[in-house]
Image (cartoon, rainbow, N blue to C red; front, side):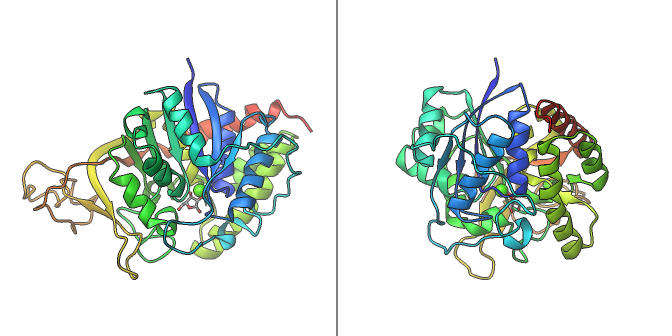
Length: 341
Ligand code: BDR
Ligand code: CA
C-alpha cells in the first residue's frame, strides 16, 4: 500500500522539485498540495503548484490555498532566491485544472482525520497553515502518522538572518505552536539540507532527455544556481525541500536523534533562531561530549541542561546526500520519459 502524503508548500524552486519528486514516486499517494505565503505571495504559490502539477501530468492532485500571511509578523518573501515568480527563469503555462475550493487548513485537517495514523504531513514552508490547523482541530495531533518538517538552523547560522532559517524566520510563532504541539515531528534543518546539492552535471544529465520537464528543471535551477554562486560562491544549489519529502519513503537515508528544539519568538534580534537543549540523561554530559550529549567535535557546546525539557522532535543529524541525489535524478529521468517534448 502506498504511503499517504500531504505537502504543505510555498513554491518556490525547491518546493517545485519536492512536488515533482512526490508525483514521480510510486511509493507515495499524494493526497494534496497545500500552499501558504512564503517564498512568494500565496496567489503566486498556488499558481506555481498548479502549473508544476500540470507539467507533470498530475493536475488531478488538488492544490488548496491556505493562509496568506504569518500569524503575527509581516509577509517576508524571497524573490532574490527564487525569482520574481517563485520559479526562477522558468515560465510555465497556467494549469487549466478546476481550482480546488477547499481551504488549505481544512484540507490538512480532513486528510489527517480521514485516515488516522496513515498520513505523513510534509511542511516545507512557513508553518502557518499547520499552526492554524492545530488550533482549529487539536485532535490532528494524535491522528497524524508523522510530520516531517524542513526548517530551522540548529548547528549553523541562519540563511535569512544571522541566526534564523527562512521557514522558521517567516513565521516563528507558528513554528512555536507546531514544535510544542505534541505531534510526532522529524525536523530536517538547513544545516543538513544546505549540503544536498544539485550540480550542473545533474542538470546536463536530465537535459539529455528532451522533455518540457527537464527544460523546466533546468530553467528553474539556473536562477537558483546563479543565486548560490553570487551569494556563497558555490557551484551548486541546495535542494532543501525534497529532502523532507524523501524521508517519507527513504527514512534509512537519515540518522536522527531525539532532542528538544524550541524557537525564539520574542526578541527582534534573534527571532526565528532554533534552540537545541540538552538531550542526555544526566545534567552534565561526559567531558568528551557537549551539553547536548553529542560528540563535542560535531556540535557547538552552547546549550544548557538544567531545565531538562521533554524531547519534542527527531532531529536529522546526518543524511546520505549522495544516494539521495542519485535517486532524485533517476526519478526525474523516469518522469521526464513519460512527458516527451
Ligand atoms: C527553505 O526556505 C525556502 O526558501 C525554501 O523553499 C526552503 O523551504 C530553506 O531555508
Ligand atoms: Ca519551501
